[in-house]
Image (cartoon, rainbow, N blue to C red):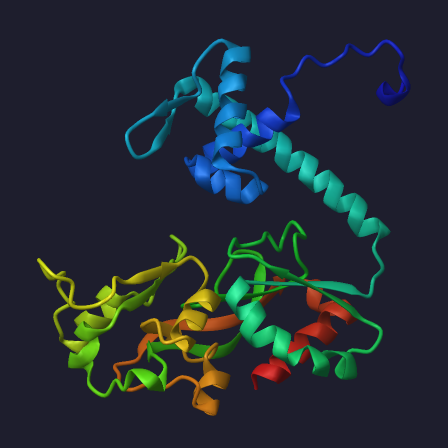
Length: 311
């Protein structure tokens, strides 16, 4: 007998799904704050959901340390089970969506800054070169699983462009350098100590992140030291998104270590300047898709469009 048509199936006795989702996200990040960002709720809501789950199970799932979370043995077992369960659920939903979607819808995934500063300005050309294809732009700083079909094509950054089960094409080298508003009047690297530095977060898997500490080392300069007593300059700024760092630089709030690819239009117009080097190499941008997908006409058309825009 088909289980789904049976009227005698045993009811499932599970904690609330919201609590399980909150715990699974917190276990993956080991952070209530990052889990809240993933689920678009507040850290307090995540904490309440996890606490309620612990009470329902009658045992702690996290050790709450001073500055971090640590899974208990019970938490590890539950996190593993939930990850497998949610992965299967996600795969089933994706397969259903894939069957109902038209063949002419292509999902292109890339990080948020590249989507905003490189892909979006070129969207007008897409309709001309790829008529009849609907492009779905997925902007996220989390790598998607191309083999599982989370996206059809991705633009990724890295050193070699070698990922299991993926076909990749190098698009362009990526370089970072100090960039600022011309209003700052910055002319020498030695003047950096007079201005706030604008920092950007990098993903843990980044092979060669463009950090200010690395830039000062390659420039052969000491990093500006914090001055005691009366402040001589405004404090540094830090952003999780490079687009926001670029906007801060445009507003004259300091000097940012920015991608010369993503800041190209502002540098051409003179709204931003690159007053000096050195320039840091962080690898290249790669166009990627699961092996075998290039044979699909819509996927290949979008692939050719992205490659042509980069060329």
